[in-house]
Length: 63
Image (cartoon, rainbow, N blue to C red; front, side):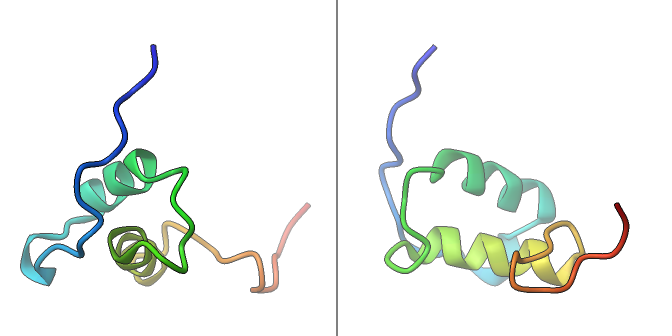
């Protein structure tokens, strides 16, 4: 089932951004370019700091 596009692309207050909410933002903004969507960029940063996302430019370990 298709979802509606996000209404706002503004970053959220840091105090309210949980890892769970960051995951949801990444899903809701999957079609947004990271370079122009503050909400997606903020969520990505949160997931990286939490160790839930490893950027592609970082070395990978394992098979």
